Image (cartoon, rainbow, N blue to C red):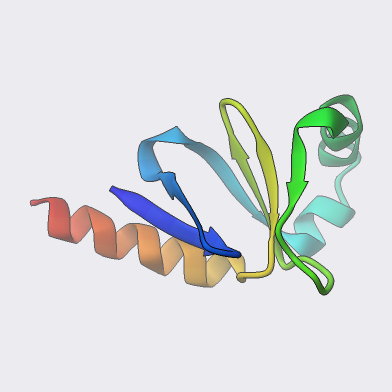
Length: 82
């Protein structure tokens, strides 16, 4: 199943490693270091300040959609798979 993460982009739910809210990402030195290390893989989908960070195997996305909304979407997908 796919999850819409912003700007007409859908990614496979099973490819998602982590979804972080903006505040957690900003206040964590580990996440900050991770983003700097993977800067060439970061794709900003937000025209305004991003609301969440989505980490996959291949890319890191800065999404305009809140992490809570993305969590709800992923939960709905899991229900529909059964």
